[in-house]
Image: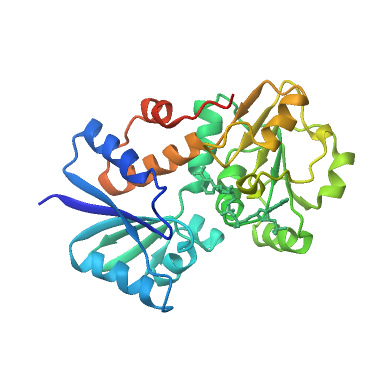
Length: 277
Ligand code: NDP
């Protein structure tokens, strides 16, 4: 029987996941279907009921997107360490009556930066902007890449301090506000993991953080040159990229987790890329 997978979110019309997983399945010759489900927002327990109905109908796994990542995490029987720190799941696997939660956003992000964009983080100064769900999922994978220093800046400073305090710092990890950045010099990599670009806004980051030989990465994708990427370009940064590669790489991680085979990502990223200019 064809194995069934789905992505669940609300709204879900914009999702690229069925296209991505369809291309992966074709390439790796997997007998599977992948659909999009608009999850119910109300009543409170309706999301879990929808997931359980999918499992009962033979579903093998799900990707989870906004606003259900916390609910997916909460309903799981087992959770990976990455999902635990994020407090959120972006992928579920259903096996032997158990629901296992994973979070591949951070590994997908690190893989896109290090492999696809050839910007290894080891020994580098890395600045991350934001302290939301995406950053929660990215902290452990970022630290595993062994930067010399990882600074996380956020508008809500107590929030970013609390997040950083949760990580048993195995590296040099610091939390701060935007006002502290001017004094911190240049970073080799600046990652905009705020949601500011979704509304065309710019996080209050000073141009002094960028270095011309370094890189700037924007998690939002398909929005061309966002105010953040424009600021980086104007500061002379040659390597600027948006988050389309992260999207495809986290999907590849989930696919490999479910199917035991890792798909190629380059052609899929190329197909989904909206040029910045
Ligand atoms: P959250 O809503 O969880 O967090 C949003 C963060 O952005 C908060 O830290 C908030 O700061 C900050 N923020 C919002 N507006 C501004 C602003 N104008 N100036 C400064 N900071 C601001 O969002 P997520 O973490 O889930 O997502 C963040 C981004 O990552 C989004 O653009 C999302 O689309 C993208 N994303 C991309 C993925 C991909 O595959 N490419 C996957 C997941 C996310 P504060 O805490 O101070 O309120």
